[in-house]
Image (cartoon, rainbow, N blue to C red; front, side, top):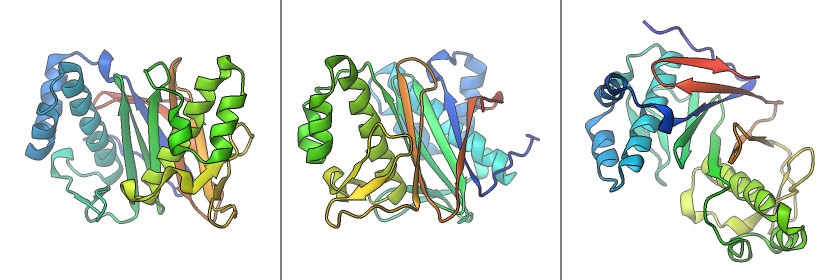
Length: 244
């Protein structure tokens, strides 16, 4: 039996996994044993072996963490999706999770009592920074264009991950335009402002983390009470190491 994983309402718990460093064949077989047929089929549809591997480890990460929180056998966990496709844990309305993965790594955020969104990006991946003009608010795109070249990529991904985390927390998928809100990027406390009203919603709280060089994580929750973040390194069904 696995050790229970406490999940208190005052924290968002963020777990980072280097999937590309997991190669033990017996462990990978264990992952497949815990996944549903639908999850296995989805992973197997990827054309590239590294993408199939990342999908497998990512789904195993979610089941491992939620089994430790609920005390249930990871194979017995059941998932549903809302009308926009955001997954949730059936039968446990108070437990919220969100998953993101990119270029050999995965991150899962857990929170009790409020929806959570998380995004992970590899800042070295190819992406034209002109994307900011298409998807960001004008003030954000101008900010990216004005900073020195050496800082553009960092600022771009700071904003991009915050936007993705917020959209995923709201759970409305692509129906929410990325230019319908903007952030005070670069400030000590991140705040969101809505473009149509110009109003800040102080209940939204955002967290940014760089778990290793080249990777950036952003997480979002909406809560009337202060929330702090706890960060962990995790190898599914092996162990969890707290960072701070």
